[in-house]
Length: 161
Image 1 (cartoon, helix red, strand yellow):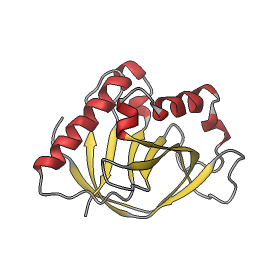
Image 2 (tube, one colour; image 1 turned 90 degrees about the vertical axis):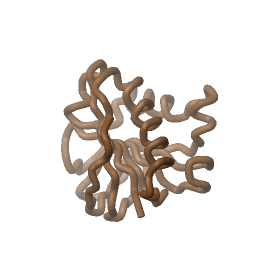
Image 3 (cartoon, helix red, strand yellow; image 1 turned 180 degrees about the vertical axis):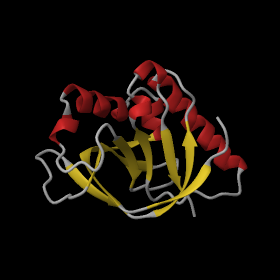
Image 4 (cartoon, helix red, strand yellow; image 1 turned 45 degrees about the vertical axis):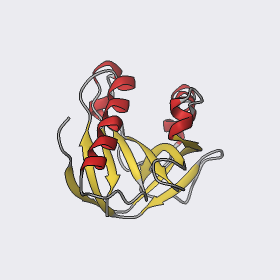
């Protein structure tokens, strides 16, 4: 992986499904994130999201951080929508304000390998960098580059101060 590019993102509205978890829970075998992904894929929930901004684009959003990397946070899988007023039963909506992000692009490979590797790189990068995380909204962008699970590439947007 290489150093991130810095971008400014516009406000987005997302509709999807969500859970609360911690990095410790995810690392200790009580993973909520894979369970949420399994549900999203198995139940083909993307098809139920109305007013999608772009097809073949899924976002996983990290928000509501209680104690930075150490604490509990919300995790959501969904799609950006043009209108979030019609939320299907069992789903939630979230508005992500515009902001400044450090964007990290994963290596190419199996999605279950490259995303955790990218996050490990990101955590190390911020420990060694003068750049500060904002711990507001972070998100992973799954687009046409990640359709092939065995040769996926994912962008991870980290909100910075």
